[in-house]
Image (cartoon, rainbow, N blue to C red; front, side, top):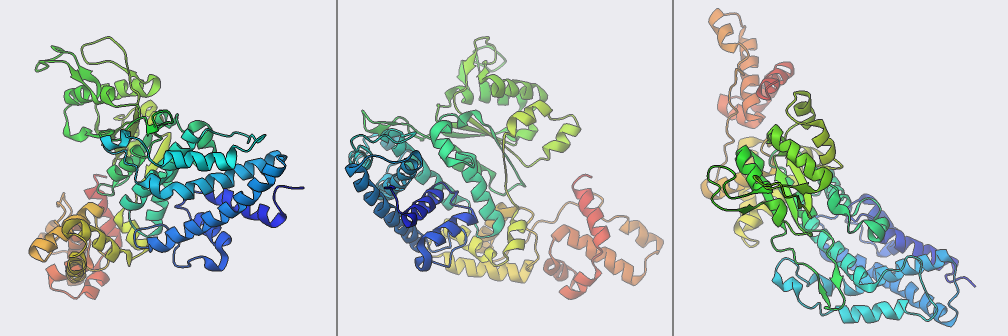
Length: 514
């Protein structure tokens, strides 16, 4: 007699696929819908802060009820006759794991690893162990690849911690934002979560993550989500996690430091190694704990000599303090971030190819705000509200958000490209809070008149050509038809009609240094 009926097996297989799915991809919602049928909430297409989390949590709990019902029935059959095929036992283990995860998701959420409190006893472990043994300590039963309960608890805590960090800090309901959340989840767990739990959970620190994207798109938030979502082992003897995450993430902004200071900050130095080295210094690579992460922000700025030393760290996980020959081990994880085009830097000979290929074993690209709004124009209001909540708190956020949206519509227009991305949006909100207006800075000219002054002196332009050149030049600086129209005292439609796309492309190319 099979362990599951045909209908039960279909349900259990669906639960197993659901549990192993990246929660930030559309397939997750499809699998949830297939399990819940008419009870599925149709509103949600992606996990995001504006998507009614209470309804979503109920949906997950409902899947947990389905899983537990199947697990209880299978357990009774195994207790009476502990004979089943390998595939059936694997499926039983999957559905039990999801049952345990849902039962203990809430108490595990209260376990804080960000402070010293995280090293204390985990109160829910004993009940977790009893539930684990109830389903899995059946006489004569041994599941293929069965793991001990301490590892399972650590896995569940990591999943919850990673989800909360991504969900709360990588905002937006546009497809680019949803894709970014899914990409970060994959950086933490890879595309195969089952394999991660079996063999990769304690090896991911060997894989360096490179985060690229324009300035102001949240690269440090992405790095923080990845760095603070690492697997932390659980000690069943002490009934506590083996490490905390307080101080486990450090950012080093390489563009703000001289090469000597970068070396000292990264590798440390010995007293007397250079002028001003009055005592020994421990660098961040040395002080980084095994569960810790170092973010090298603006990695495209570093000097060639430091690139060589960094390459050695990535190849051997060893380094030396300045002025010493003693090798020391880097035990943590390295994340690098840059807004530079590293392919162009390599072609120009400013960035080593071998270092690049060591850095990019895992690549995450942060989208611009313009890309997000192109996909979902209405998302601007949600983003403004989110930033307003951080600036003035939840109670005053709606009023401030209304003022900001009025300002954007009046002064910038719907086509404003937000060249400073979310960082510029944050400053816009603060400007409106203080002065009830926002004026974006004009881009530096850098010869952007494209010969306009000379053409004026020669008298070689018709009135229409002059208007076209002038409208295009001002639009190239403001990025907004609305703002250009305001400055030139023209109708917005007139400005749009006279902007020359070819000239605009040349001006943009010049500003980028092409």
